[in-house]
Image (cartoon, rainbow, N blue to C red; front, side):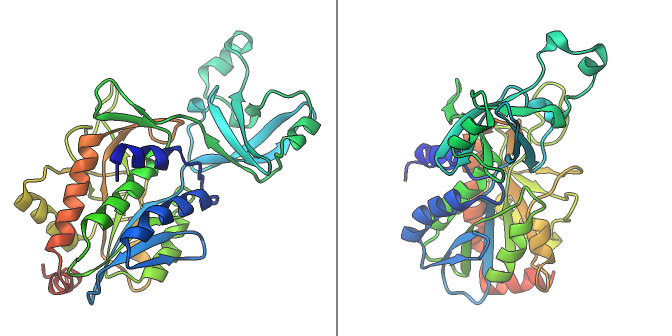
Length: 352
């Protein structure tokens, strides 16, 4: 399995929240050859299973990426839309998108007023999302309809996978969260005979209030859970924070929905120290991962989030450092290899 090819295929795939079918199919292609069993729920979440331990560890990336949905078409052939997932409107202007219609993909660009005609007040404020539109290069509503586009069609940001000047730096449209999908695949491949059961894959609709994590957790019924998701990189001008690209994976201490499980986090930290794996610690006051809903499902699964610092998330493009990814892979592999049913018992009882 070539890692760069895996990254490219996963990040190039168009699958916004609620429309994850292409990613479900792609994950199945990678998971089936390395799994004892494929597990799915009715939303499209998909996992591969290895091992037959008494306890189950759930590793969950999320299939979806932020995007948009067609809401209406003007008589002049411009497409109005709403967002799927959280966007800062200023990063949307003049960006290319792909509309997936009934006749196939159609390229468009998000349009708005040019700066020459903005009032002073408009220049000082963020762009008005309601005033934005998508232009596919036609003159009428009839041409849009002929192209196969209808209200409800998904719209995906357009950006191609690229290796940057320093080849450890990788640019792509959807590291949030194809990072977690890639890690789930490679982790399952690397652990053919775990001492516990490992269920590794990705859930739907994280970007729209973490909906898929609920149904997936009820399906898998894990004893422990790890959300695999991106973190915020503070290593750019004007940013402050704890996590920096190139300095290792992140163990998230707390986010707006979840406090990392104390004994599970301690176990992970001890494994990292024992194996000499550099780990960063960070927290999020303005975001969440699927760990929150996994921890609140059923009778409650002890959960943590492992991530990598990523630049420019929730925009058309993002950047990840391959060294951080490889560190996260080493960490999750080490955690799996140190776990057994008795240790899981002690983590659940918070006696580890």
